[in-house]
Image 1 (cartoon, rainbow, N blue to C red):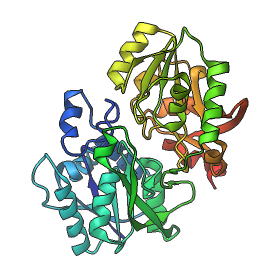
Image 2 (image 1 turned 60 degrees about the vertical axis):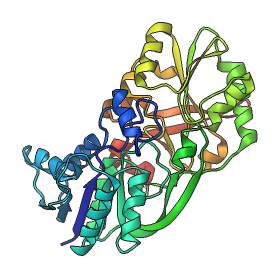
Image 3 (image 1 turned 90 degrees about the vertical axis):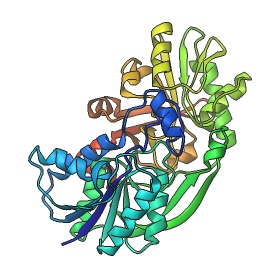
Image 4 (image 1 turned 90 degrees about the horizontal axis):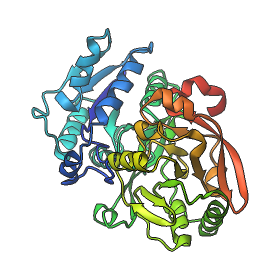
Length: 384
């Protein structure tokens, strides 16, 4: 029987909705001050509940408490049946990267065939640092920054990959483990480094590749010029998502934008900078008519759910779907059969799905299919 090590970074992703770029180090306390809610536990429960529907056998060795067994015990009460063993470690509720390192060492001692973890790029780095390619790893995405290529596109997709791996159908490939320079990130400077390569189980369409770091400056300026000339209205509040493509709009307007945050633009001026969910909701109440402008994450294809978690389901439900603008260079779209949304609200993800317009250049647009990452197995014809 395949033996799977399983661990959760319980604080991963908490900074996203409140406008932080991560929860590493002291950022956790800032996230809590801003009212951040736990993300990783919800992603873990999505994984386990989907797992309960499957018909394959494997045994889990699970980190103790908030790093794993707590969630297994929770779904066990709902009839969840799986073979699992709880480690004695960690014995505390406030965990650190050292706990991740120690748990992974124990996994290797116990001879696991695969390590599945819930977290972001920082967790991926920690896991890969210990494992050193000895066994494949697979991430369930819960972080704010998701640059590595070791993650499933959603918790549900991770179950599909695990099932295929256990039954011998998944191939094993090498993928990048990447992360950003935290000190530079807090200053609005994006420096991404590939730290290692790690083997991962792959099922076509269910793994998100590492993020594309390309530039495409000419495309971006054409996109921005077209958006400003043909789509902007002085009486509309524009919530501008992260990224250099969106920043091109404010560059052309002679305004300063937070590169990796959400800013608000109204009547030619910035009225909100580096916003979190609460601040966005206040602006929506104040201004009424609003549009959201986002770009596509290169190679991964996410529109919502990666890197722009400030656009929570509560925010998105207050904006007309026709007032959501997607901007992307044609180069980014070329390798993408479809785009993805993973807001954490499956009903909203389905509403956001379908063929939608993407602005790709000056006076240039295309239609692109958006699929809900939570339910990709229902769209096998599009992802095979």
